[in-house]
Image 1 (cartoon, one colour):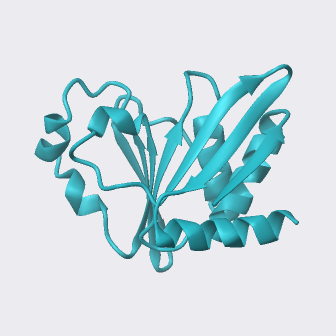
Image 2: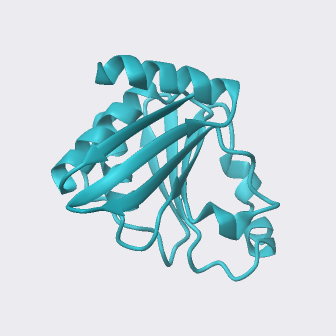
Length: 155
């Protein structure tokens, strides 16, 4: 199952992220794919806004992970762009972040290949003429449930 949408502008990307927030379940692992500047962090900001977070959202390029706590849910925003070797993630205890009470949003997941769990949902962003094309695909049964909820929310 997949959902595809064309998005024009930062506000629209954030709004789409907010709709994703309503579809994700606790324990979900989400890979965010796309070149630099495609709007991955903007989408994460939308997810967090959709969950009720009002503070600043920055890319964790240098810290690797930025945690956000909500009642009954922990959200972890990872940016693995600067990871040289997936083994580095083992040293930071990355497996501890993946639980049934968390939501993990991972930019540049390919840098953690072999260490990260499989994605429940993969969000791919690519440039089109004046905006972005976003493709959301399910990788697991949990992901299929999320995409069913997203498809319903967008219709």
